[in-house]
Length: 359
Image (cartoon, rainbow, N blue to C red; front, top):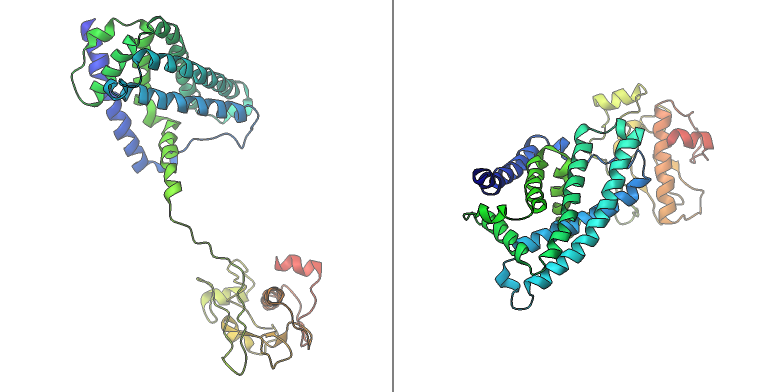
C-alpha cells in the first residue's frame, strides 16, 4: 500500500502534468481545427442557457478557489488570516458555488442524454467528460462534512503542503496523505486524471478562454468602409480623379474581363470593371478608370457621359455617391446583357425588377 500511495501522490501527478502540458501544445500545433468547444447552442438553447451559465460560474470559482487555496503559502497569509478561518471560508464559498455547478452540470448531462437532436450530434467523449466532471464534483461536495469535522484547518494545510511540493519539485510524504479520509484521496487522484485526459477532449477550449483575456490588450482594429468614395473636383483647378479600382478587379483586355463579356458575373466588380454604356461606342476601354466629375461650372455630374441628375440640380454628396454607384452597376449590367440599353443622355429611373438584378 505504501508503494501505491508513493506512486499515486509522488509520481502520478508529474505524469498527468506532463501529458497535460505537452499534449495541449502538440494538439494546438498539429490539430488546430479540433481545438474548439463543439458548442451545440445552434441546435437548441433551452436548458443550455441556464445549465451552461450555472456550470461555468461554479466551475471557474472552484478552479481559482482550489488554485489559490492550495498554492498560497501559509506564511503569506498567516499574519492576517488563521487557517481555521480560511477553511471555513472555503467550506461556505466552495459549497455554495459547488451546488451551483452541480445544478448546471446536471442540466447539461440531462440535455446531452435525453435530447435526441443533441445526443445524435454528440461525440462519445462529450458525454464522458461531463460524467467525469460530475463524479469529481460530487466527491468534492462529499468532502465538505469531513472538512467541517477538521475545522482547525489541519487537513487543508496537509493538502496545501502536498500541492506546493509537487509544483516546486520537492519530495512528497505520501504516508501523511494516506492517513486522510478516502474522499480526499479519491478527489485528488480523480482530479489529476482530468488533467491527464484534458488534451484529448473538448476541455482544451479552456486554454482559449484564458487566452481571450489578451483581447483587452489588443491594438485597435482599423475598419475601412467599402462604400464608394466619389471624387469631387472642378475643371478649373484639378483634373477629375478616377474611381479607385479594387484589388483583384479585372482590367480591360485581361482574361477576366473577356470572361465577363461572355456573361460571367462571378468576378464582376461594380467599381473597377465597368463596361461603359453598353452601346459599343468604345467607352468600355477606359471604364476601369472612368472619372465621376462634378464641377462648379458644369450643370450636371456624369458617369461615362451619362448624366446622374437633371440640369440645375445639386444633390448632396451622399446622394450623389448612391447615384454614381447605381449607374456604374447599371452600365455593367447592360454590358453583360442583363439589362436593355438606354439611349438617353440621363441615367434612367430603375424599376424594382431592375434593382433586384443589380443587387
